[in-house]
Image 1 (cartoon, rainbow, N blue to C red):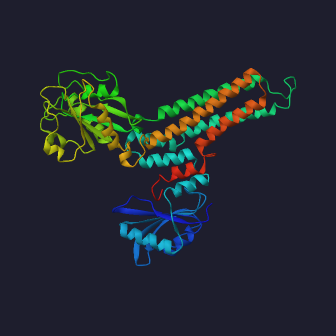
Image 2: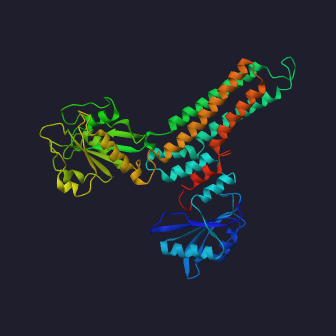
Image 3: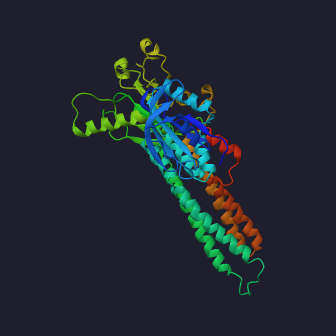
Length: 457
């Protein structure tokens, strides 16, 4: 356990009905007794909660004290949570009082890091906490929950146990000839190795399924019917994924594909054209699904027919998310060269394109990359993936390394090579798995992971 006692506000900033200050460490008990004024003195020898007042040194605030003694807490340290009125000024006063009494400000992610370092959770679960906090939609929430509640961790543990058993058999057989009664038959070792290799493949397949497309940056095409959305979708996705027709309303169901920009795979979705008024049931449902897709998008790609733009200011009212205007069909003789001035006055990013001829698509990709933070203008390295994608890539890389080392060990066993060489390859396969769970993760990588947490987590 750490020798310091940390404190931080663990609820989001701003006004709310309730705010929570979390304290963890050896002095949490002392601090709770110093600030809590309860009609019934809290029995801090047991887990429980008490109502009372919080003495912040300037006055008193209504208080609900939650007490979780070590080791039965999130950090496996003594933990106190002070539930107070969700007024930022009152929370600041309470936090300053705790600091004056000896608590130290928690660093981002420090509560979860202590949970990891004290063996309460492994690194996979810590990453699950981070992914859950940063989840932007239901798919990302499900993917984060799968990490947090041990889906991949259970599979990694199973494979690791098999590798440890296999390596132990190899090392135990080093001092014996095959004719010795204590020697493990080579066929048995190879059979166990094949089962372990299959288990690694199963874990890798699970991780590939777990990573949702929504972990990628999400771009949704929007616009009026016949604006050329499906043609542009096919041009950007590099193939005929969506049906293209001169008749309005061809697209009803959302169609998804990958658009790679700035070195990053993005999820591109074509949706039905915006329609109002009296709609039949299928069209009404299609519009509702399209609005849900637009609401979860990181960027709306607004496709406009440059020859028949319509009332753009009215259409723009449909959008809440950041948007990029694709001024489409510039190959037509009647196309206007640029959007109207009243729209450009809104500092809207745009690019002139022709889905039919492929003109302007590179510029459109550059503008999209900048708006998504994938380009250098945003201060973020070009091509940096979102969190869910980044974590999945790390896990898959480790699983692939483990599978590669295990396959090499099996080749050595099959060729009759010395068992100590196979045992060394098995050790490397185990080390790759240990990197996933955090047993052998370098300190600088841990620092980068936990630094991405917000305060109080």
